[in-house]
Image 1 (cartoon, rainbow, N blue to C red):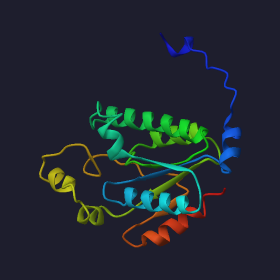
Image 2 (image 1 turned 135 degrees about the vertical axis):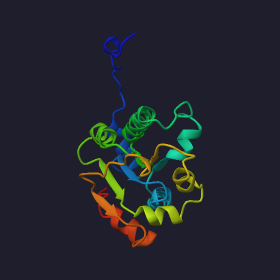
Image 3 (image 1 turned 180 degrees about the vertical axis):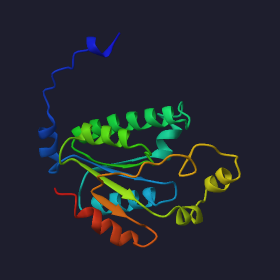
Length: 194
């Protein structure tokens, strides 16, 4: 059955009603950057800060989704595209439930990040680009990904062997080798208007 034959159901409870109960506006905060740039660290710190403020959040992390929902995908450009397509739709559904959804994914391609932005809609998507230099990312590499990529044992690592397209319109840009976690979270919070 093709998607053209599906008719969206009429839902009685709308996004605005869910947001009213939660006393917040649903948003998608999308962290992008190379492996080791600080995405998970900052996403966790941001979620903790929002939680302490009484906000309803959910963190979608690339490593976690790769172990479950997206475990059938590899790391080819096609599979990376499908990975982010799925995540963007999940984030949209959770945002429609009134949550502040924090996404931490390398998401190397502009087209897929634009899809996530379009799905979330105007004023509901905040892209956070971690432009941490690759040298700093390599120093933090607890998984050994860069070492294996440089040794030719790992292909398609973003930044080495696979392209990473720098975001053209990120709302926030942070170099985590120059900015503390506390300062970075403060900077991001200025873009989250409740």
